[in-house]
Image 1 (cartoon, one colour):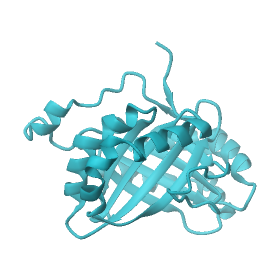
Image 2 (cartoon, rainbow, N blue to C red):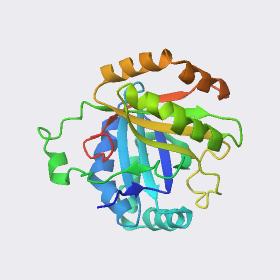
Image 3 (cartoon, rainbow, N blue to C red):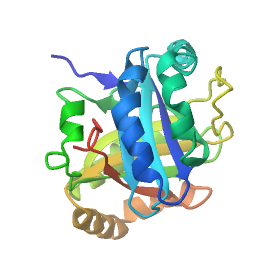
Length: 247
């Protein structure tokens, strides 16, 4: 079967939660909200615990385009699944507006979910079979001058991606800001950002440490950092039991 790239439009969503509420939200999300979103045309790519911020829930979803995004969001947030669970979900949250709207940085840079299998609800409910994966997913968000996303993406594909894979990482995707107007303003996005985002998978946290050391020793990697406008955001993430990405 051909690769399934999910998707032409991607949201990275970072939620700040009330202390101790992350597992509560994950239970609601993984158990009640995935299928309802996918039934109206979204792709729930992955959802994660942030390893460095205990009250952060991070997730990504994809759409077939900007018009498809508008229609899918309206169908879900005005529909019965969200109506049934929104109060319980919202009760866990302090802020849900940290959202980047993204698109693949070059053709083929989106997430390849070919063969990805999300564990069933029955598996999720079985705590013995549902132990968290030992692998981690690392997202790096590079902040760029306006208009530099394409050039940075070309440099990344040609020079930096080989360094990443050579140092033991699995490059899962690369994205830049989607500057199209947010046509669903009920859900804000960080509209003024100009970012390049890479997503990589590692077999363990220790593998990521070795990867960082290898990059730090690379002149090409250090030179790339000179074009950034502020420090790179690094998210070290552990996939939940029903995340498609990072298993």
